[in-house]
Length: 598
Image (cartoon, rainbow, N blue to C red):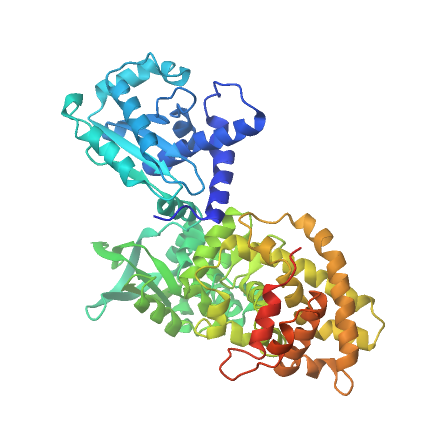
């Protein structure tokens, strides 16, 4: 079993420090401040596990922690009244170590003492709760053991030690659940991501004059009140469009959205005839009662997601918000409800096929890539907002758009063609079905590495743009900086590889100090090399040519990385075979891997 990945450990510790440590019982022992901080995180992990397993508040979970010296292997004791279950928990916050036999044996020894109500050897945290624990032992119908760990799972010897306890007839405790619950790295990762996920939408939908299609997918379609969908939009927000390719684009950015609002203002009764309708998928659809007066029948839907028509509903909601005295009761839309998991292949096919009312770019369909949602959830824990769906509100230093992510990740590639594509053919990078896009967004890409890359990329570009602005007007120097910006950025990003790969987000204030001197050196080297190469060709044409850029990057990296004397380079320079994935691959890979780290 794999240990918790470093980026999730960083997120977990942040959550523990912010939400659980403030509510923990005071530490009983006197320790150095740095040791206390580590111990508090370890104690808080017990509370985190209870919070996630039982859905209790962080404060209540923290109050259940008894972890300290002389805890007898018991880190938390919690009585969960709804199920009359007493939870006994041991937690280990470790980078990689397994939960081992000696830890399991300590846990078992503490459980035996607790079941005998022998409190003498326990610490003050247990002693202070003696009456409460005695009451829980008397009231509970079940006793559940939980082992929570962040390391590489639980050793077999530890499992065997726990099983010996559960099989011990001498305990004379029938309420002891024979199955230990293990809360491990995969569970922690799932729950951390779930904190940033949009909740599923469960609601009632009313349709008039509805009809049903049985096969191949259960589908209902009929007339819905637009006002009902507006109310749903106000209540559920973005969760309502979780499987759409876009959120609300804003009426100022779309003629279609302007027309929607104009119709609602001038002729709401004709809205049904002028609109393409709304399509939604859902996990379950159940019929409910019918209003004999209006003819509307209710449908109970679970896991609802509007996959086409987001602009219709959101534009109407914006109109109602801007004109609170308006009446859109006469506005109706055709609504199609398809029973199909939105994240399944069929749901994705429907989403792609039906989204053509507003102009659609291939990049919009990146929203169907589940990897993008995982990245959004990870990045949200770091205090940034990743907008991989086009929407109106994607601005500010904490916002990262898909377009920016594409450019940043392209600048991290060793393949020199990406520097050319960024300049001449950026659209090919945004097609989710292309090999270029898939190379940029592998499943191994972490949210923190994307954030770090964005922060480094922004700092580099800011300085390079400043170089261009300060260069003499209409000079070759200015043009070199302007058209070689992707090459300069790609070379400098190679020197920041370790910092971008760290498990914690970079302090953005430190980046300019790190890169200003080496980047200025790279600037001069780029200009000098450009003067040598650009004898009969303009910078624009030169830096749009794949062969020219590959050759330029080889010489620039060799100089900037101080590798001109490396004896391996002459042989590598002469290798350029059609079987290689990109021009000058052998030498470029060699140089890239030897970039001195800042």
